[in-house]
Image 1 (tube, rainbow, N blue to C red):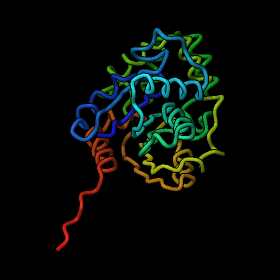
Image 2 (cartoon, rainbow, N blue to C red; image 1 turned 90 degrees about the vertical axis):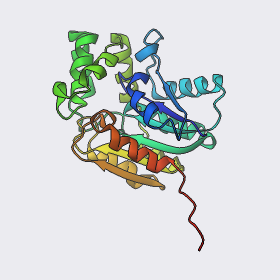
Image 3 (cartoon, one colour; image 1 turned 120 degrees about the vertical axis):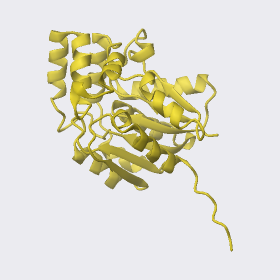
Image 4 (cartoon, rainbow, N blue to C red; image 1 turned 180 degrees about the horizontal axis):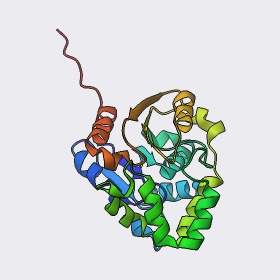
Length: 247
């Protein structure tokens, strides 16, 4: 069984994938990682480049003896897996780019990255985690999954928050999208406040083997807002087609 490696985004953590681990367990071993500075690895030194995160994930999989895998990245994690797909293309089967883009400056985001950095320094890590996590949901703090998601985000220190914002702002994969040769599923919620449609459209148009799923009535956390639909999309994409009977 080919494992599915799931890479969370900015202020995320492996705990956010608990539903996917359960829903996909019959077709995939799910390997959900905590990036340095976030989630269960909040004690590790923050990383301030996307390439640095990609190298860390690859090294972690090497230490675990994981050679070949399918790969999903959410948000900042989508930037990381794009780099992984360029560094180790032969190890990756299918790719999922979820609520992400190729432009690290995040044009069209609910606020510029520089403003997020300034407010983080003024407000502190916990308030920043809760404020930004609310933007990931269509109904903000009223969303049923908001509190659990915010609790994961609150693991991040101020240093990790600033480093993650630096990593995104300093990265661009736009000119290298043609290097992504694996079959790719792009998932985007049509009310995403972090990645505008232009980011999603660019991935869809520039990656040769790309498929697109636009999920209505969701913001940045489709897997928490419409978890059954999200899992169904992954199952449909990751499962090999059943052989047709020859009559």
